[in-house]
Every structure is written in structure tokens, then in C-alpha cells.
Length: 292
Image (cartoon, rainbow, N blue to C red):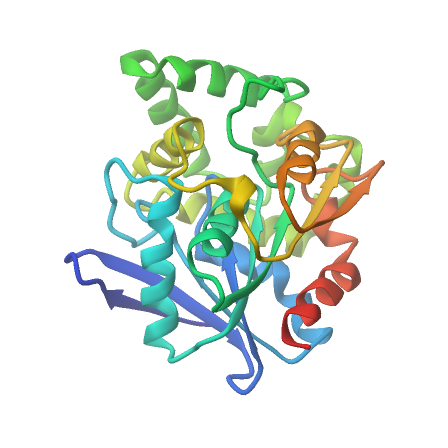
């Protein structure tokens, strides 16, 4: 993995990284919430299933990336374009996991036809009147997003405290800190010392400059995204599991109903981590379709 800092036209710094063969097909990866560019080390097995050049960044406010106060989900597209331009990449497929899912959908909506295909893994859906956005969430996420919907000082204090805890995440305390968000199938994935260490490193590093990136992500999810999900013309592959306690399956089901060109992979017994850890072959097949 190669990391560097690039300068953006608005004066911000963006932390970017790459893996794979530069002659391969470009895949842009958006990490979860919270997180950092280091998360995509968990997706390295994709390189064994195709000739890919993986590109990612720490979203604004995470890791070494400068914060962009008041950003929307759509704001990520300018940063994605800057990243791809820096590496002289053109056509690409985009993958987003968890909180990265909406940002992958933003690229599909606003950067087509260069963005040829999107893969959304356990993706958050936009707030809507036709489903309960928090139904099925584990207790930590339920509390977090109940406060996020209200905003204000109490929510900021909650996230500051949560950020301080997650900044100290290690492979030894990761499962404990994730608490009620881990079904048994995800605990089995994180039982692997290497996987757990990579996840903990990516999470803790996300708070290198504080908790505001986390705050900005959550607020962006609950406000207008800056594009119409139902108008996306790019094919989108949805992967989600019925055991997910972080982003419950009703989010994936809503996206499946409203996206124009969705292929749905709803897997009964999978959770938030296992949905990608145990299904790399299917994900690689969906990505390969972008380049055929």
C-alpha cells in the first residue's frame, strides 16, 4: 500500500492511498463511518480475484484529511475526482462499505459515465418516510442516531466521548468496544487477529485529528444527500445481510426498491463484516462487469 497527501483546489489536504497493479482496472473505495483510508486493507483479497488498481482516501475530517465543515454526501465527489486525477485514472468502478455506501452512490449519481458501476456493501439508505431508518439497529447505533437527529450540544458531547474511546481502539479491545453492534457471525470474522488488528488500526487512525469527521458523516446521512438516489442510471450491486446490527437490512431493501438498475445480494445469515469477508468472489464478479 502506498500513501500520500495531496493538495486540493480549496486549500484542503486529502490523504490518499493505492494498492495493486497500475495497469489494472481502477476501483475507488469509500471507507465506513467512522474510519480512514486504512480500512481498505481489509479488501486486499480483491486483488487475488482480478487485475485491479485500488484507490482510496480518508474522507474529509478523518485521519490526515482536512475537515470540510457542512459537507453533504455529494461533497465527496469533488474529492474523488481530485484523487483519480492525481493518479491519472479515468473509467472506474466504485465500492462503498457501510457509511461509505452513500458516497459510492454519490459517485454513481454525479460522476457517470466515468463511474461505470457501483457496489454498495451494507450501505446506509437516505432518510425516507416509507421506512424506519433506525429499526433493527444495535443499541449503540440507535442511541447515536437518535441524538444525531436532534443535533445540538448533547449530540456533540456524545460523539466527542465516543471518539475519544474509539481513538484508543486496539485489536485487544475492539470486540468489547463494538459491543451490541456485533452479531455472532461478525464476531467470528473479527476473531482473526490480523483482521481485527487492521480494523482497529483503521478506526483509531480515523480520529487522528479528532471526532469531527465522524460528526460530519452522521449529519450528512440525515440531511439531503445532494443527489436523487432514484435517478441513478449506473448499475448498482447491493450486498446486505439480515444479521447486520449496524446498518439493518431494511436499508438495503429500500435501496433495492428505489434504485433503477440494482442487483440485489441479500444474504440471510450475514452481518456487517461477514457480508464482505465471506463474499469476495461475488463482489469481484460485480466489479468485473464494469469493465466488460
